Structures are given as structure tokens and as C-alpha cells.
Image (cartoon, rainbow, N blue to C red; front, side):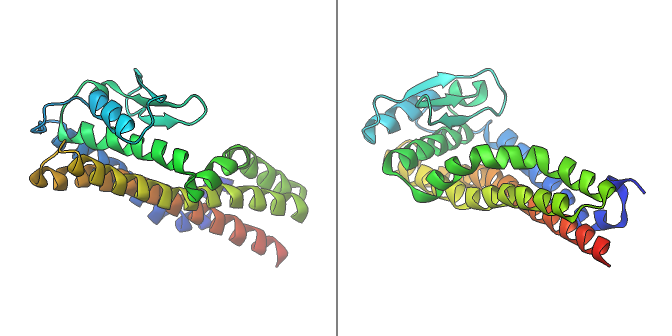
Length: 228
């Protein structure tokens, strides 16, 4: 039976279903609250710029990216990039996402340890994600425990990256809500919609972590079955 369709796939199935649910939930939350205008009537780009100035991060630019859902903070170039639906919109959803990315910029500036650890893991985790399965499958065909173990170790680094990402994203979301409310960009009634969008986004990171852990368990089961 092909590697991707063997009986151990059952270990991954619940995480896969959870991931699909998380994706649908974040899309539904953003679609819903992107139609709810914030009382401040300030765009995501302007909110990001103001929050950066308030945090003393005047040198960080805010740029528009044409990539849908491409919102991110680029620590190398010190740029907050916002997708059109966030950059140009004054919806509660847009303000929440914009402030979340500012939260990452603040983490970078203050030396937030989980973010530093995640950034350190990026190159190794990227290599591990792409190389782990080919090495593991090659090890299965060659009956080489060393190759299978190497694949497991490399994928383990990728799993660690996902685990470390969870507190990074949670902290950025907590900062975002506090900054928006303290700055008067959203009212007390608008906190819940903004939180709903950020919580839904956080669920996608949790789902990705669950998927990675399930894949790692699957590799361990497959390797151990070769020992017997």
C-alpha cells in the first residue's frame, strides 16, 4: 500500500479534519466581521501606523501587499505588510489583523523570547519540513533505520517550530486587543468581534500544530513497525 494511504493515516485524519474546520472558521469570521465597520472609521493601514508610532517604532513601514491573507510582519526589512482587505478597510476585522501584526513588531523590538526562538528555527524547520518525508521514505525502501531516524529528527524540528508559534501568536493577539481598546480605535462592544477574528486565526495555528504532531506520531509508528 502507498505510504500516504497506509493504515497509519488514521492517526492524521482527526488533525486533518480539525485543520479544514479551522480554515472554514477563520474565513467565516473574517467574512462576517469585515462587513462590520469600526466606529473609529480608521483604515487598517492608519491604525498600524499610529500604533507603531505610539510604540516608538517610527522606522517600521506599513506597506500594502496584493497577496490575499498575506498580512505579516517582516523582521528582516522591518515592514508590516497588509493585504488589501486589511490595509484599505476600516472594518473591525481589518483593525484586529493590523494590530496583530503590530504586536509582532513590538515582540521583535522588545526581544520577546518565543519569537526569537521561532525566528532561529525558521531555516532548520523549513529544511526539515521539505526533507523529512523523502528521507524517511528512502529509509523505508532501503531498510535503513538511520535514514528514517534522520527524517524523524528533522521533522521534529518542524514540529517544535509549530509549538513555539502558538505563544507567539497568542501574545500578539492579546497585545492587539489591548492596544486597540486603549487607543480608542475600537469600542468595548467591538472588542468581541475583533477577538472572534483573532481567535479563529489562532485556531489555524493550533490545527497546524496538531497536524504536525500527528504526522510525527505516524512516522514513529511506521519506524517502530519496521523494527518488529
